[in-house]
Image (cartoon, rainbow, N blue to C red):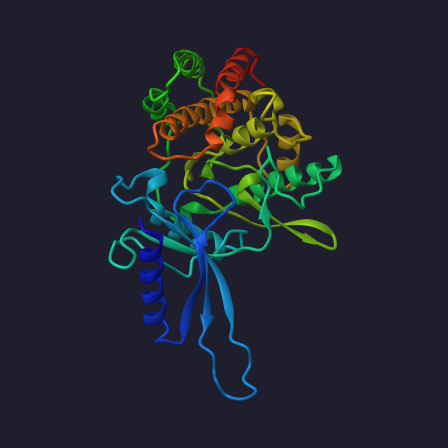
Length: 349
């Protein structure tokens, strides 16, 4: 979509909704992360013009668009995040509120959501932005606070707050979702290792454990941290595209995979200080349920992200959706699948 056209349509909506009392400003693609059609902008109240008038208010927002021309399902159904985030925010949980959104194409040409912009920055675990203190004690706090916030999110009463949002997804359905995505792998070794891992996971599926809301991509890169006199504080959790209702151990397995340096190529290592058991202990201390079979769920995370990486590397290399960061991921695909096979072979705990 043309950026200028999106901005013009958004300006018309803001002017219409405010009866001309507010304007759009600073509209631009968000630089941090690789979240697709995501833009930042401000809404400014119109100047009073009177002598001595108070400065006009300015509010910062994030716009996320559904990709045009793509079937709206799962992560491409952007609007489905609106009722979820509103319910989570209403429950006092750390997520951005959604002041307006649309499930239709009438306003911006595609469905969208607009979220409040949270203070702080996310922590890209492989290449943190300038300004983060990378001392081990600070890295430790980042991972521990992420695990603690996850426990709070998992306590969300989805049955009463969002009874019709989404049906619970069984582990068998989760496993069945990934083979067609893995099949996009450009390298035969990736495909062979990924299929071996998928088969290993299918042979011994565990009890799913607690079923409830899961984020789907829970890691410090989707947590906003802000500096305070007491150190870094979590201001919210973002990027809920892969969220759903299902085994909540999916999130813990994913978090463990992101922290486990053995899942990553030597040239793309995460800044992490905690292992899976330490993350689990922090999660439990914050009120989360002690999960079993965390190794299996971490192996599943390797399978999921390995498959996603196969697809995105293909999209980048073929020019269909260029994003050079996937070349940084590519050497880790084989490592990820092999680590998942190791975890599947280890005794269950």
